[in-house]
Image 1 (spheres, rainbow, N blue to C red):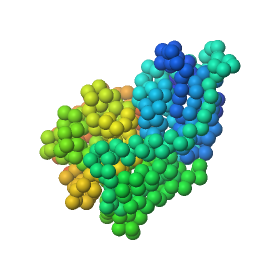
Image 2: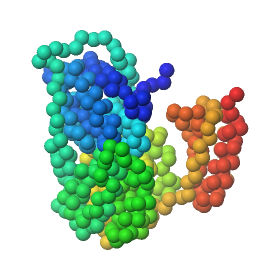
Image 3: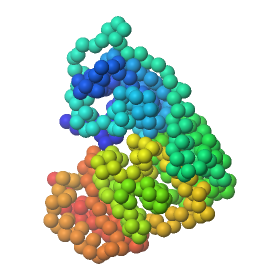
Length: 455
């Protein structure tokens, strides 16, 4: 049976895969497992729960809260807030547990449930497995005064905004780190719709906020970090310095420069790494990135004497590498950027303010700052309906990969990656030109389809 928890919590179509009944059970099971592990020893447990703007989040967050309270956990419901805000508030309020009801950048019908531990970190795999095993299990529940309470705490949003602004001030050394900048912020009609403008203005920017009118149905609908055209057009029309775009739960941030050109997560990480190396805050002069990061980032970092530690795709793997060695910066090309001095998970709003502070402190534009971090053409081809288990053992396929790498030399890169959830292999090729990348990718995809064909 497939695991219920994926790389980012439990996710699926709301009211079909993710039901109210499942949400209640997850709340109960999480409370019981953490209690058994001694997480609540000697005190009455307390949890923070937040959600994004999907209409289904209303009943699902209520259901999770009900499950937790029925197991004796006091719940503070912060309402609509970004995922990283919940992670921060867990730590700031000494909560034992955090819960976010969100499907991030997924379309509106989806939703998900993910948990944070008392330190504001995602739960370990072993704990998630224990929660799955405990679902539906019979256990005695508390009664009377021992049942949990559910308290609305929308006021905690201001505490999160204050934290983000304070982090930008500490990073920049300025009380107004964004002074003089004009910024357009695309909130994706998502969880950051109420907080983005407040934080950016408090940090000193002149801000235009767009797509910040959630209806419960329009989250990520042609807007936000997965649809940057509208943001680029707005930045150009207003003559803004740059624009930032968030996804539905605001754990990622991408940008566009003053011409409307996209600034991706690799470029964001690159300029932050250069800034942090200059001020001595980039631990061991090392950046943590996934295998999908562009070769252009590797080249730019190598020229700056910054090492890159590579991980598997997924922000949880980036976090694991950072925590294990104490690294201070890591992230993904998709815009998840983790700055461990200020956050325990990717925080799009924090990223926006810190990038802005770098621009504000420089005589250069964002476009000029990211220019050294060249993006080599990158082509990704998905090959469906194959036996992905043989991708690294088929000799003829591996010979084809070796030949492709030899032909590209130092001017390119080849990566084959089996999907974690589908019978599919992803072929990624980087090269000096789009034509070369596409030719190599399509050739390898054909070999994958032939050699790994399922009977």
